[in-house]
Amino acid sequence: MTVVSNSTPLIHLSAVSDLSLLRRLFALVTIPAAVRDEVVTSGAGRPGAREIAEAIGSWIRVEPVRPSRNTHLEMERQKLQLGEVQAIELAQALPAEILLMDERRAVEFARSLGLTVFRTGTVYVAAKRAGLIDSVRTKLDALRAGGFWLKDQDYAAIVRLCGEL
Image (cartoon, rainbow, N blue to C red):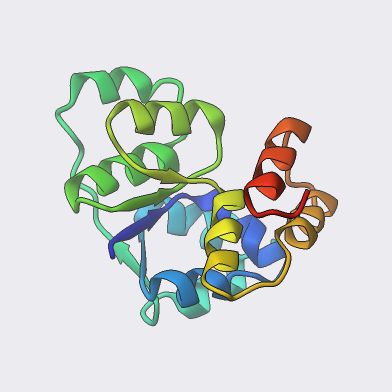
């Protein structure tokens, strides 16, 4: 399965020591250079920087992105961050079965292009279904305690989906 990730899921999963779930679920995660730079270089000393740096070349692969000629994406570039744009372009180019991304505007745009997007909460749903974790609620609570913003209605929908409400 081909999986591409943006920065946010990597950073937040690292912050709560759950980055390994990605490896266990997907075996290999591909990121564009802008995501590597944002997490590892610009983010040095912050959650995820060391973990991602260590995983690159093992189960995280950095893939170059050729700029898309997609005019619509070029227009959206003004509203999206570079890592988001490159992750979407890479997901289209490979093509990826799953794009890991959290920011609402980027998620909506990626879905409008026909990409399947998993948000960080969705990773926990997949992990529970695969028998890798016991409680999605506990994981979401840890994310929120670490500063991850998740609307109450989205929180409730995720735990309900997992039979934990």
